[in-house]
Length: 313
Image 1 (cartoon, rainbow, N blue to C red):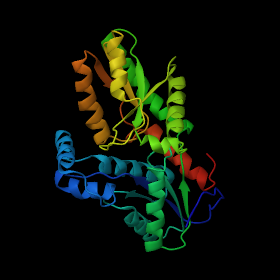
Image 2: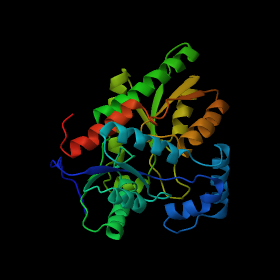
Image 3: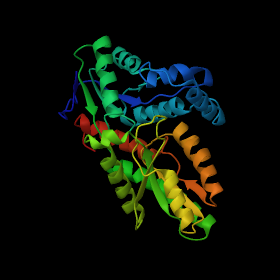
C-alpha cells in the first residue's frame, strides 16, 4: 500500500524508488514504447514515423535512463541507502525497481517521481503503476509516495543556478538583457479545467526561480503538446517567440522548470525545433542546462526523502 505519512522510521532499513517517465534507448524500441505510453492504443503511422525521425536527430535514442541512473547513484551515495530506478513506460519498469529494492532487504521505501509538479496525467499514473507493482511483487509493503515537490528550496536553488549561468552567457552574446521564458510540458486543457493543480504549481516554481535570480518578469509557456486534436494548455513557446520577434527582440532564453533531465523534449523540442522556429524569425534561442546530476539537485532529492523518513537536515 502507499501512504503519505511522515513518521520517523529510523530503526528500519529504508530505500528510495526514483520514478521516471521512461524513454526508448534506440529507434527499434520506439513503437513498443509508444504503445506503453498510450496504454496499447496505437498512434497513426505518420505520427510514429515523425517520432522516430525526432529520435534519429538526437542520436537514435534517449539519454534519460543513463541520466536517471546517474541521479540515483549520486543520491544513494549521499544518503547511504539503496536507490532503485523505475520507469513508467519503459525498462526497467517500476515493478522491477520494487523487486530489486525488496530483494535488498528494504523494509520501508520512499517513492519520488522525477516530475516536480503534480498532475493526474503524470503523478497520478505513477501512483497507479506503483500500486499495481506492489500488488504484484510485495503486497502490503509500506511505501511513502511523495505527491509534489515543486516549491522545495533545494529544487529552486538548483534551477536558479542553471538559469543564472545561462543568463550570463546569453546576455554576453546579446550584449544586453535577454527575456526569459520558463517552460514545462503541456497537458490537455480539460485536465486543468477539471481542477488539476499542475499549471498552478508550474507557475509557482517559475515564480520562485525568477525571484531567486532577480527577474522582474516571470513569463511561462508550455511545450511538447500531444499529437491529438484536443486543446492543450498554453501559451505555447512558439507564441512567446513570436512575441519577442514582433517587439524587435533578437534573443530569447528558455528555462525548462518542468523537467529534470535531458530527453527528447529538451534535445529535440528546444534544441532543434524551437531554435529553428526562432531562427526563421530572427530570434536566437538559448536555454538553461538541464539539472541532470547537478549536486544541488541531488542534495534537494536527499533532503526530500530523508525528511520523509524523519531524519533532520
